[in-house]
Length: 216
Image (cartoon, rainbow, N blue to C red; front, side):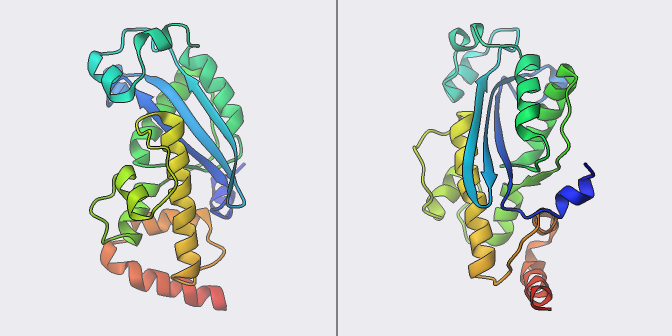
């Protein structure tokens, strides 16, 4: 399926994902230790995916404390290659969203490459879009945006599925705000990607153009 056709899809149907990892960079040998994702279809979360992954080496004490994922928990988990092959089926044909997507995409690419698997969607970053839509927020960390928008949360940050679910709620809130506050309806995934790259000072005029175009 061509990337261009996926970008034309409505932004209310996609997969939101989150990784927990042993560090900041797969180029430095870091690996994923958990993947969590939610499938959003027509504006509703309809399915979930969560798996721990054995990185093949010991997790540092800092990462154990930060994520709550221990060496004992991953010792019996499947390898990243096996998990990624399952995950490739879960995301097949869907665009992808993550909060700070550059981080999650580089781990997805590294783990998919190691598994000799592939995906056909493109990424959008909920954090970059939130910076444009919620310029008055104290900051644009996921937890802050959840509180700022009064979104549902179980209060469990830094576990992959919980973060993916909260990012999913944030994404749907941004779509609602575009529709009801800015009168921009039928938002495509490509439009959201363009919004994420728009200068903050130009967001108002960008949304005005989209609103006028939607009425033609």
